[in-house]
Image (cartoon, rainbow, N blue to C red; front, side, top):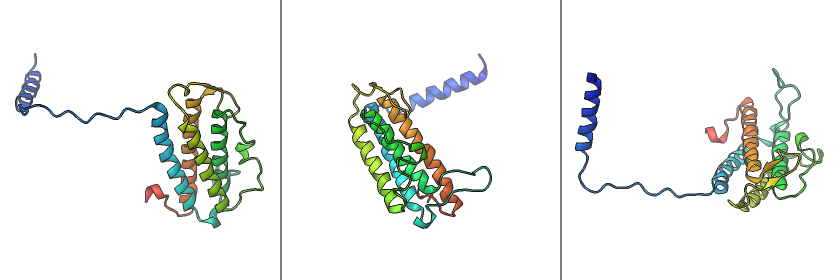
Length: 190
């Protein structure tokens, strides 16, 4: 055996020998949780971040859309908020066995409604309130139930929730860029 092995072994032995002789303190037990509860924790964090971010954009900037570079034809900030809220309703309607709203890819069923910041913020908050009621009904017994529909299905209930989390984080990142392009530091970065 080489010399380094003996030096390492001696260091380990001395550290063990130097440990206090009394009973060892065990770490506090970790609170076990279910998968739906663990996901709800992340969903709650994400919805807080999204709502604060959407609220940070001034009302007069809600029609902003990037135009430089390869950003031609992208959604305005208002359309991003509306799309995200509509998609929340779509994902969670499918989990609940309810028909989703049409045209979430285009911002929702009626492009002529919900145009002001106040209307869009209410729609966004309502979408998260609704999603929270659906997630609260998930259990270890029903989370693997099959879901059909046009938004990320076929899937399981918990799988569709994971898609909704991913979707919200994806648009959150885009919306962060919209704020920064307007010289606004996102709330999470302040």
